[in-house]
Length: 189
Image (cartoon, rainbow, N blue to C red):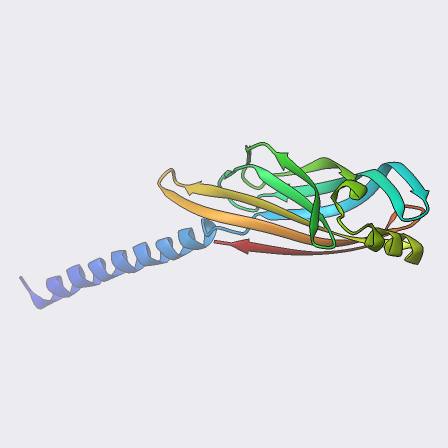
């Protein structure tokens, strides 16, 4: 074989390997797993029932409805396990809601209404705290939601993702309207 022929074969092999490398880079960017979004869009308070009698007997029951946005920015379906919503008042769990497992389609989203019936007087050990909050005109609550799941790429690669939403809500009293809401979103691969 001549040197010219060997040079052409080596050049062709290098070109094919380079083309495969570039195609792999492009596919890796297209199929790169993106973080699913679990976000509390809004929250409302409904069905309020209060009863305050002295000394220090407070009954406060209401429904906190969280509008949760579940969004999948990936090019593959996101199969999530149960979504768990927890509501805390002064680090004490006062309500929870579990949504069933499902699948978010590729590039799809869904807005879910998550009603949680809360009985603060049943869960708060020290009723002095809730009386103090009522007298100050605001009740601070904390919500935590977690959505574990997986994405299957090309039917071969399974990537596990865990999306977490953490919100602080301030409810005005006696109006029981949400006056402030701050949320953080994080995802673990």
